[in-house]
Length: 308
Image (tube, rainbow, N blue to C red; front, top):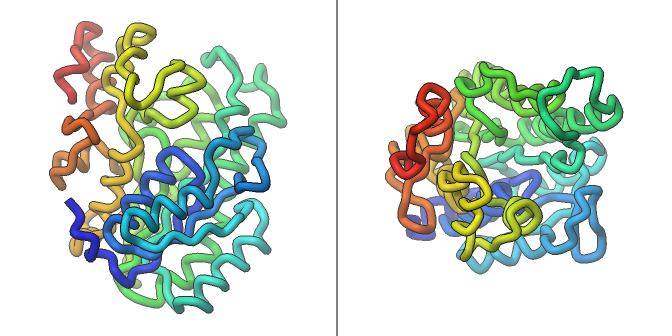
């Protein structure tokens, strides 16, 4: 559990912190005392193409501050290089350093076409390319401008957030564009790890399991975080789901680990890291969704309860 001082004086940028995993990671860094810049396109006066006005970057910043850090909301479209350059110049001007970069920009769920399993040419090209821009190009643009600031000091950490591990994503994700969008950050972390190693910095890929994001709860399952178990009746596999706080704690564990370089270039998961660092989800459990899914693929009778 954080003492609120482990990251005091450290500066973090969570790109894509409006909701879900990004918000939770920003708050967890705040709990450890960090100053956290939170970015996104949905603000109290503007709504992104995702179409959810109920979560804003200002709200995320307030949660970071309430947790014990300092949250700073900066509206940013990470597909616009000028905006990202201005963001990093502001961080440089105000602090002269960047210690943690979390690339969590996504916002592509509304572009998914169902059912999965079709051929790539059967899906809309415009939607597919937009998905790749949101899930891949944004990360590249952000790293281009943020890394020169991060590498000024040894010990910098980059976390590429995705869906799936290197092992799980060896299996096709059943939709061409989604597969590329979620596999690319894993390779990015490996490549950046190679480039950052001799500068004393670390890059990793990090995935949650089945994330109980705001949209997952209220749009797909029609439940709340308090009543999420009611969703198991709709899909028994939902029993292995996890709150955003779980992956937030995973990110904070990495950021506060003085030996984080041992993970350089690796693909990591919230469930896997919980076993190493000892943190739990909000209910005290340690769900390991990716291990569960791998076991279930071999034995359909596998019980999710055995992986919490």
